Image 1 (cartoon, rainbow, N blue to C red):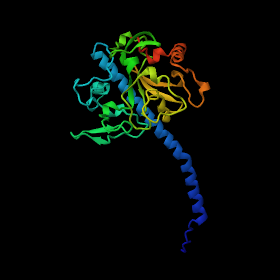
Image 2 (image 1 turned 90 degrees about the vertical axis):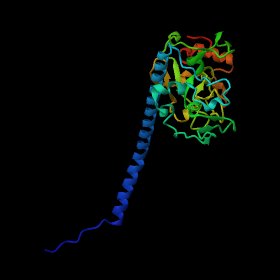
Image 3 (image 1 turned 30 degrees about the vertical axis):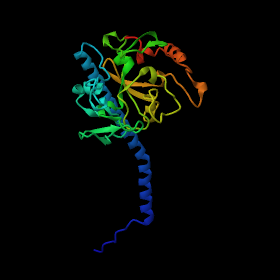
Length: 289
């Protein structure tokens, strides 16, 4: 029996197969990338849910009081940023996982400095020497200081008495715990880490058409739009659930197109917050409700 010689692929056939594989890869890789990004957002939302429950458990153990955003180890502490006396450290026994306090969408931040004790810390690139933080101070899931944790006194938004350290809130005094945001995703310029707290009175009035290139109380939440499409940000709420919120929760300020401003002055901002009924979400800095 005479065997017939086996036919090999021609160069053209090989090129066609390679071209088909390349086309399929070009189609599928963006799908895979989108699926990976979606998975990271889901992981971040899951972490936010654990934080929400941790805050709720903390309040249950402390007579329904909201967690304080920080408390120094002692008044003589030479550098309070080297201790773990932040709300993150206080609810750590309930979540037992450092990872839940970091947004999975951006690279996992790593300490870039070392104390004489050998402990690793984050060094602030904008403020320079002396500003070194333990990780509990610079998480990118941040506490709502004046709308959830504490409140001051006054009659309304235009007349807030900021003297003193304020008073810890009781969760039972909050008008609607299901709508009160307690923790939100934040960004500190282009760093992979942020700051452990924000002031709602500032964060609710961001510049919409610019990013901060340094420290800004106003941009802490809204600059997360670098990574959150829509934008649809993630947050924890006072009743223990986690969810999303968007542009509708902010009073917009524009630098490049000032004609779009929803408020040009602080008084106008207060009026806009009243008109859009946003205080139940952000919290009233002058009132415990």
